[in-house]
Image 1 (spheres, one colour):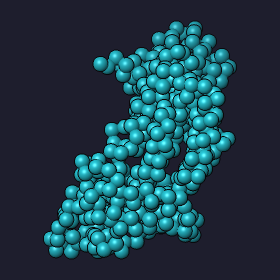
Image 2 (image 1 turned 60 degrees about the vertical axis):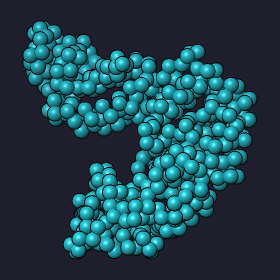
Image 3 (image 1 turned 135 degrees about the horizontal axis):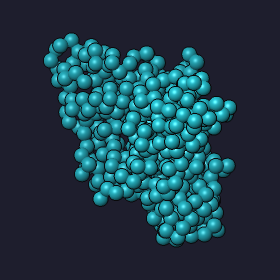
Image 4 (image 1 turned 180 degrees about the vertical axis):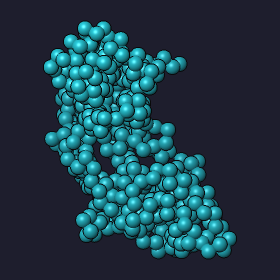
Length: 456
């Protein structure tokens, strides 16, 4: 983020310091001093933090085609104008670019709205000022998109409820949540704490910014597009009413963004809660509950944030089978690209994928999932090797290099079975044991989990 305004005039980016402290935010809904929030948004240090975050996140270009590498020179030339428009309440966001990505499990597509890099910068700067206003009053059992909180904490709390005897779950799925957010309802919640009309107008403009899809721009009447830095905070603001209602009723629950699980002691209680909370969401917040995906069921039969749990009296966390299948599907695409590649280099490229997955699921207490996945990954790599050798002579020669006797090597090389069968056969397991893959740097999921659980 440049320290001065465009044109080298030396004009400082620092505003009047109108940001609101966390201590002020805790005083209640009135939030004295929030009439000058925009000054805090454009304040120099806040904008520099936002700039570093946006550049660090990279991301795709928006409708104007500008990438993050072009942001700094653009700001050096235009920041003075943009800052003035923000302070005067005249800034107009550009349309967002509609893109679609496959939903987890491959069932349907998820629509994202990609703001321009300049709008991402402004949204990030707003988020940094608004989050300390709202976050202190959010529920303790709200875990999504909040500083110092993560999905694994929500999973641990859910297990705690089940261990207490709440062995039925009301699993509420909000249908197309981000697409159905009512703008008036959302803005009324934001206005409870923010009195700066410039900020309120700008948020509404972001909500109503056009959506470009297939070269045509349409104007949304509801929804907050996923993809902008401000959307996660706005989702928590509107769903905070749900949290407060559940707290008022004394329910045990966990919420991560629009995933909400309520834990109760019986099926009858769960059905009663499902009916009343669905009515609350539809009447009060004008959100639609997906009746097909929502259910009252046993926790070990449902998936929450990729996890499930065992049915023991004190349940253990486990990776949900659907999460394993999704991970395997992702890896299969990588293995197809690995054919014909140097195995060590390919394993090096797999490392961040494997580490990222296990870092999320390492709190799982059921180990056989990781052991089975490790075996499946090694078999896939052995399959790549068998395909690369192609001819019987090359297969026998390479098996002998790996310590197999001549007779066993030739018998294995000409057995007539396909690559997948051979990759799981004794000769390939003997030639390429786990120790071989450890030596070339393959991440063992089971070893990573055991290391995590040995930590004090």
